[in-house]
Length: 401
Image 1 (cartoon, rainbow, N blue to C red):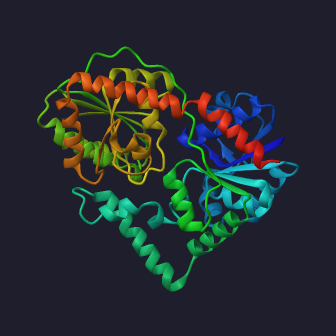
Image 2: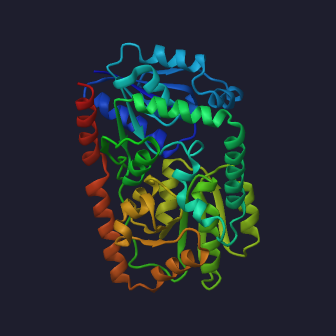
Image 3: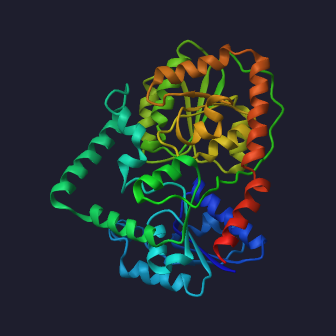
């Protein structure tokens, strides 16, 4: 079967991009003719990961992307997609606007693997917890400003219309034309149902490599080494993790927080951290080996995003043997069985985040060791390639018949 995998851009090495390349390799191993297509790609960052998969790119320059995105059904992008999918038996789209363009061009031959509906187009439906938290969360700062700007945009749009209304109309038409939608989680499937009025054809979670775990001391230190891995963006709520850790560390001299990741909010977060008098280190983006070392040196993984649809980093952390503190809803709650294998807390409350960290240090070592083992075993039973890959390939083959 000839399969084209369509994505807007292979740039930053995010979870969606890593997953789509892994899925493409899985389909190629199953004997299918697979090609990647995108509007632009960072060849230096992705050449080794693509590893021989044919890739077609529009080579869209960076300055043009915002203009093209504002007019998703542009003739230039549509013509590229038409060329890319010509002769394909099946098109698998990842991320807007590729999903709507695939539906518009390939119709029932197109499938959307939905990581989440586009947040910019549907902010309230995809960020329900963030909107609920903005009015009272201590230190909400940038989050509150972001939500306020969204409200202002919606108010203007309601009066005069504009490009966002046109984009939503195009997006809904394109998704309605798709042959199938596959969700990465139950939260994503519920959002698709609410926004598009269609049920997902399947829920297939991401597959996450098990890189093994080091031998760890029993329990956790009274002043633990904490790791946070996240893109530094509003919805990831790294500021909340930072504030919660600082509150916890005020009573735990020697506790450290290492923040792995980069993004638009890094400078702001670094300034905020300097005023908190806590041991916080920003190390930026790390390659796979350096990230493994950072995980092996840590004891606790802390990330408290709002409205996270899945969160591969949580699975990776548990497989590496880390104890986890995470958000009490969305992907983290689904992954950890509503708190049976991790400390879940309200991401809007630094006090609740600090309390979750404190609960770990107050839990007997034997109980923590049992939780760590239970979480790792559950991740291996649910999310590793040996489990997910055959399921994904079988579903795609059925949809392509």
